[in-house]
Image (cartoon, rainbow, N blue to C red; front, side, top):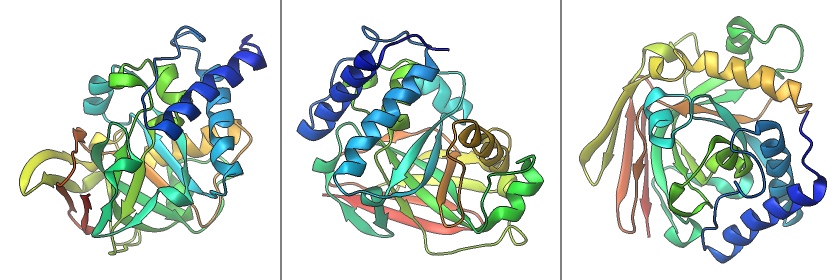
Length: 263
């Protein structure tokens, strides 16, 4: 059980909220919490996200972070985490995203699951999670960090809503009778140049494993996954930085194409 007091949790959340509001990255939280204090980091995340909710954003789903070995190596972490997806983070396929909405954006390609049933009771294993998925769709997540220079520990990224930025969903939906998530292949391009490749198996061995992990973890935290939510299951390959003016295209075999540009 974490012994960090509420005042420290609030101070850490305020640091992140100020960075988000001013678009100026802040220093890491390691002066306030231990780098591996995950329980306190999730408490900070809850406080940080409450600011967004107070400003009118609504919860539309969850994201799983650090699911691929490539991304874990990039971030220097060794386990997955999760964050909350809000309505103001969602953009449409082929949209133009204002780069000023982001601080230090990086793109990664994922499979998103749209839930048709709650994941609140039962074993929450792969079989149950498969039945709960309505459709799968190609997704482009733009991860971001309020921590300067991505100088993050695991606790930093957890507290920072799993380094969430924005996300874009493709338009081709497939049921899991039509698609095996672990078997897909992915290609991501920036301005037509291939910058990342991967497979479904890169996501904890199978994106359904990631969904099952999230379902159990979310229930343990007292906020189970619900029907209608979007679940970003995690990167299928390395993430890459984006800059103003570029176009990012993701192609996932069986799920088609999703694209975004940056103003």
